[in-house]
Structures are given as structure tokens and as C-alpha cells.
Image (cartoon, rainbow, N blue to C red; front, side, top):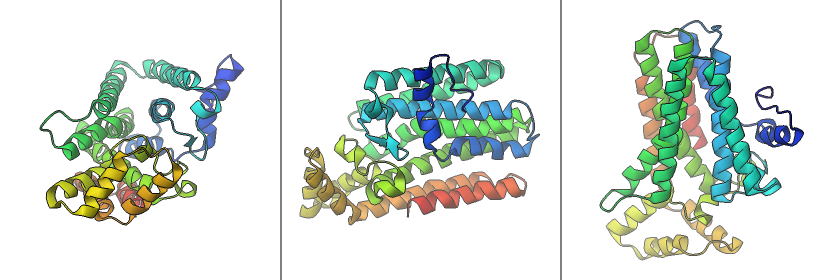
Length: 306
């Protein structure tokens, strides 16, 4: 990762390595490595493909922080806060370019797989920005957004690991399906954490999505319940969330109310459902340490959501 983010320009290296050095879970490279255990785990394309998916993920974080005006990422100042929006956007572009350069050496099939995933990722981001069409269920729309924004790259992580290791095509397909569902569960857990955790736990500022007016699943479940039951306290909380939450006191009030609301528990149950679907997808695979680890990741996602 450090080698792939070096530039002849020292400032670009500093900006590109800002989030690499901040840490992170390395969740996607982990999945590449685990999926590779179903073929030859020492095949030459595995580590480069793991670098590709993590660089792509990092690039989206630089861009997301600009769109969300986030101040903190991975427990440190976000790139847009430390430097400026333009630097953050261009650094994200630099990381995409480096990922593409590595990808070119992995063959045309790898390029095609990554290109399709990147198209889905961007489409998901655009759909989130545009919002659901008239008559579309907001929860269904949101889950489609997550399948694109997060599920696509997690699925590709599993696909690359299996594909580069020479695993059987049926195994590649099983792991890709697993990754898609796990990716959505992972993002849903993040949605819960954005409300339920503090910045020390998550490394991000709680309520960032609320402040930006982004309706994540707990908010959508609240709106759904308010429309169905018409309870005064639900309607009042919806109105608070729809108001200007730039004021820290109002944001804290909104967070406290949502933390105590059944909508947050419903979002947790949704997270568990996707994690269980990911678990079920692994059923056809042979029993081995790698499969056990993939199953444990399903449990870890649920644990993150509380």
C-alpha cells in the first residue's frame, strides 16, 4: 500500500498516504486473502488485487468526506479538513489512477470486473444523491444504493481472491454472492454505529449523516413507522431530524432520541438479516479454516451493530 501510494511529488505522497497511515480495518484485502485460500493462496495476482481494492476504497473515502463535509476519518482529520476539498478530490483521483495502473498488469478480465464494480459503485452514489423515484419504497431504494456503493467492491474483493487463486468458477460465484451480502451488512452496521457509537469507538464523528441530511436506514425505519402509526413522538422526531442540525446541541438531542427509538433496533435486525444471508451463501463451500473465518466475519458484522 505504501509503495503504491508513493509519488515523485512529496506533497502528493503525503496526501495519498494520509489515510493509509491512519490505519483502518483493511477489510477488503482480508477478504481477498481469505477467498484465495480456495485455490492457490500464493498465486502472483493475489496481493496486487488486494492493493487494488483497498486503493479504490480509499479513493472513495477521500471523495465521500468532501461530499459529507466530514471532519474526521479513521480518528484523524479528514483530508478535506487538513488541506482543502480540491486536494482531497484530486488525491482520490490519484489513488484511482494508481489502482488502474496495477490492475492493467492483472489482465483484461480483472480490468472488466473492476470496471463493472466501479460503475455500480458510482451509480449507487448517484442514486443516493438523487433519492428514490416517486412511488419507490425508500427502504428498498436505500438497500439498492448500498448494494452499489458498498456491496459491489466487497463482492469484487472476494471475486478477485478466488479468481486470482485459480479457484473453480462455482466457488468464485459463491464467494462473490457472499461478499455482496456481507458488504451491505457491513454498511448497515456502519449506519447503526453512526448513531449508536461515539467518535472514540468508530473513529468518525457521530451523526455525520444526520447533520448532512442523509437518511440512513435507522432514519428510514423511523419515517416508515411514523407514516404507519402516526404517533406524535415519532412525527416530532422526524421533524427534528428534518430541521437544521448544524447546532451541536440539536444534533446531540437528535442522536439521543434516535438511540432510544425502536427504529434503531429495527436497523440492527436488518443488519443481522443480511449477515445471515451472507452466512447461508457459504453453505456449498468445503469446510476449512478460511470458510470458518468468513463465517466469523458475519458474526463480527453483527457484533459491530450491537
